[in-house]
Image (cartoon, rainbow, N blue to C red):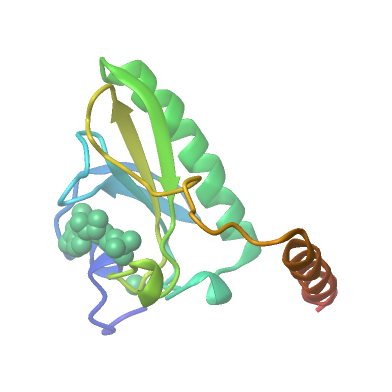
Length: 147
Ligand code: 5GP
Ligand code: ZN
């Protein structure tokens, strides 16, 4: 998308500098300018899509496949990589700051201090709430699949 003032579009079009590690017809991958850990890569669609809702399925698939390959490459290329986190912030409330959708591939090192607060919720939902959420979600998913 030309003239949209998007920093990731500028990188993909070669109008802004980045350490490009991979590019194909659908996606590009480059180093994050402010990495959580060394080797932190962003996988982005070549065609501007602000969020998941506007991302083509084929491109979304290629983003995940590319992240999977990058995870293997990071483990092989950088010493001390003991794990990988994939993260996609969709929407401002989820922490998205650049509105050209992107998948973070973050290598993890022992004792790096990076934290993600999952699995320690103090007031987990009741069984009834879980069942209700599951029912509403699976029903809505069927209509999205068929659209
Ligand atoms: P978000 O918070 O939207 O999930 O992540 C945006 C990411 O883009 C941040 O990790 C930030 O460091 C990175 N970023 C922002 N501007 C630039 C840039 O100009 N170049 C690169 N390579 N990364 C950027
Ligand atoms: Zn863009």
